[in-house]
Length: 251
Image (cartoon, rainbow, N blue to C red; front, side):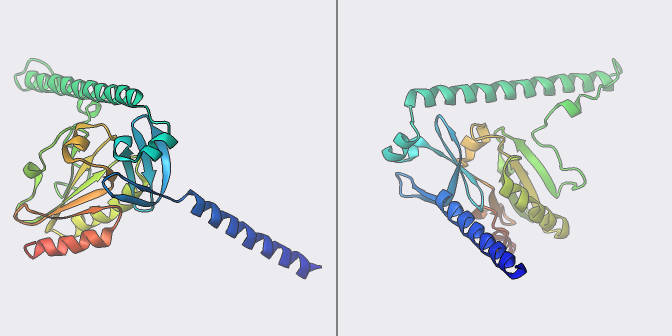
């Protein structure tokens, strides 16, 4: 009787494994953009009025319906008017956020000025401000967040003479969280490497449009002279290390 029960349980486990395997395969899709670019083995994480968010093992990508075929647009009930309204709303929200941050920075500067001129004690408003170039705690200048969605000139943040690794990421991106510790360890343990991080916040921010970011994580590697050596899309730390080694030798 014990053997019969054991065999039945074993068969059930195998059957469950096969079912889960088939289910995973069924959710894996391939989307082809009108320019020929393919997104293979991806899953639709979210459908937005202007596009779909795809997730794979290596990262997350936002693909706009205008970049996809008519068949895909029809499948997800794409409506150009709704997409335009959604895009305008997202842009307006981002502008409002940036204006709010600018006002907070202005008030902080005024309070600091009053403090140094002896007019009033400085208030601790820094914690309320999401500064666009806040250093990561405990990392010094080896690791630094240089933007939270706002436009940024990467060239001004390159550590000339060393190799600069620029990591485009988002807090909600799982693969980004997997890759980040490896990048930070590289910067902490190798004095020839500095890490600059750019938080895209969402797909509608100014920095996303500025650098045409469609997938995160995305890592750019610059050599000692500030020239871009290579770009890695996805959580491929080995490829990042390969570009870093190339950048150290002059690119």
